Amino acid sequence: MKSAVIIVAAGQGKRFGSPDKVFVEINNKPVIMFSIQVFESIDFINDIWIVTRKDAFEKTEKIIQSFKNQKIKGIIEGGRERQDSVYNALKAIDKDTDIVLVHDAARPLVSKQLVERVFETMNPDVDGVIPAVELTDTIKWIKKKNIIGGTLNRNILRAVQTPQAFWFKKLLNVYEKAYEEGVYGTDDAFLVEIYGGKVVAVQGDEKNIKITTKDDLEKVKIFLKLYEMNNLRVGIGYDSHRLVSGKKLIIGGVEIPYEKGLEGHSDADVLIHAIIDALLGSAGFGDIGKHFPDTDPRYKDISSLILLEKTLEIIKNQGIHPLWIDCTIFAEKPKLSPYISAMKENLKRIGLNVNIKAKTNEGMGFIGRSEGIAAQAVCLSSVKLYP
Image 1 (cartoon, rainbow, N blue to C red):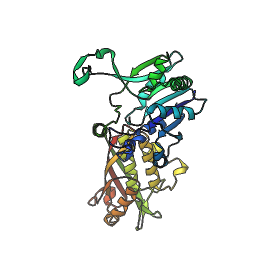
Image 2 (image 1 turned 90 degrees about the vertical axis):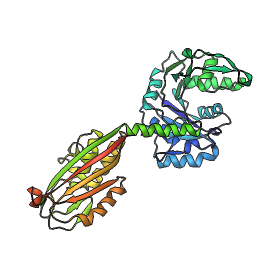
Image 3 (image 1 turned 90 degrees about the horizontal axis):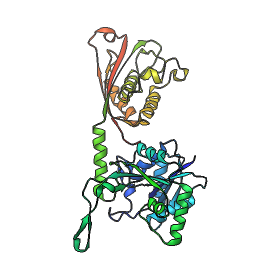
Image 4 (image 1 turned 120 degrees about the vertical axis):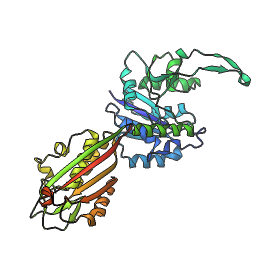
């Protein structure tokens, strides 16, 4: 079964004060990219189509390229009204599509769980599925001069969200009928309803906020900040290696002049190994040996910076974002303080904020006898709600 998503981003943004509200950045990511990445991450979604204004094509293309999206099939020019924009996309998408979902780009906090709930409710007995939430406020209708006309029964009313899912051919058919008869609706489900289609509602998501005004944008920012603050993780890493002759001494990706180096399957970078374990610990993903075993010939003499980059890819794909890492290297010899700034630069280049300290062991133990070097790291990470 083939499924496509239409992401509508062609609005004028009159109440927001700018037509570019979906290009505003939150946490260094454009609003439009939040929902794109959610749909990208869902296996049953095959194609993504973006609908935007003609004058925003170049900006949209640059964003898509910078985030390396794989499922976007094309950018469609929007119309005068939202319905026109969706219709332009329906006419462009592949005709062998079975299910089409329509989503507003101005709803960046759509979750994978909500998309799955909508999609999984689709079946041959219904023509469409929409997410909806209960109303908590008393609802009244207003007559002229702001006189109250009456109070509505909120128990039977719902606020409708997107994405909305439909059988593709059914939705295209009702759109064609609507244009023949000059009918316009505020959402896609309306058109299916008025032509006798059966649309069912599933539980929506209160955080699936639609950005209509700048106050809504602030609500989204606050929600994401609170979520991250309430979903912090701490990981601890430790590693040690024996000093041996005939090996280069590499710590923090920096080659340090010394008569001995650290023994290990890779380059034995004790600091990077401790950082990797701290990162994996904050994500709950085991340790360095699980992901890069010393029995695997692929990792023989490999730079530990490469292993670190692979680790970051592993945890970030699961929504784990490292905020800060504090490290200590324990070595009696050589003196490491002259090389710490270069170590920090290596880590900064791959996106890590790190503090590095170097200490001796006051002549005690294997470190004090210069038999080996050890390092420990503590990592603070946040769980990102969106990819």
